[in-house]
Length: 345
Image (cartoon, rainbow, N blue to C red; front, top):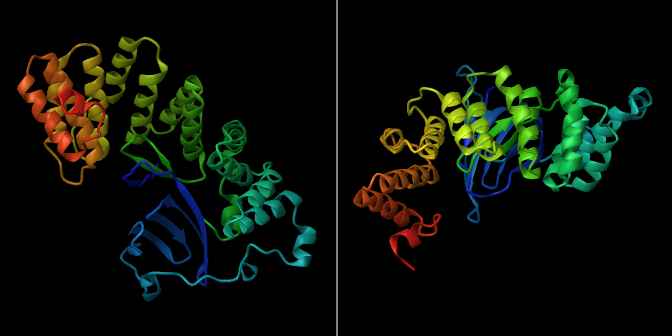
């Protein structure tokens, strides 16, 4: 599915449209971290919020680079010079909903989200228009509208990206997968389904979220992002805890710690084993996950240690349990109920 991952620190997803002399591009990301695709190629920009410091990493395409990729900041251009402004005669032959989509992109690029949404609402008969209307409604917490419009995009998924391509744009959006992971998704069926899962979760519509994830799994049965999303929803959606735990164990299957994503799946597998009182197995899985700490998000390390502490406690290993809790407390004194478990008030 082509996802790229970035650490999340309890900040909301962000979306921006960039216009430069090299052409329009769309960036989606969190404050201080952006992934941009445009005419000049792909690059990741990360910064330290509040300091004005940032760096940009160019993602090479077959080792081909050019000097223009090294620009740290693009010069903005007047929107009227870009492809997002239709000429008079072109307007005469351009369908109304397509004109509304272009107007929506233009307003969005200028930061006028309310006007952009009004325009995108007039273009929901286009898959791209419905997709953008849904994203903006999602940002404004209008979840019912977002779900309906994203449903339209889902039905017409074969045409997703058609008008972005026509007007020289490409886009990606970042959405949370777990508290430790976010995914960058494109306007295609897999991305639509993953966004619908996030919307349905916020609405408490667990069965619809599961249905979307099952569809995603049929598209990419071994995709780790799909598995991670699925097991997270299963833990919340299935009323029988033991049944949910057994299903999670079955879905994850055999797994080793090759990346933070693998470790996150190992975390859920261990939690499932704890849920069916198999504490030794859970401890062993968590210990294996904690052997590889390089490039591991601190939030994920804390979660792994917390679950292992629970397993140790159930096994009567109080000293080992306290050791894990103390390491968590040293990293994050406010993590869960660690301070209470340690007797620190």
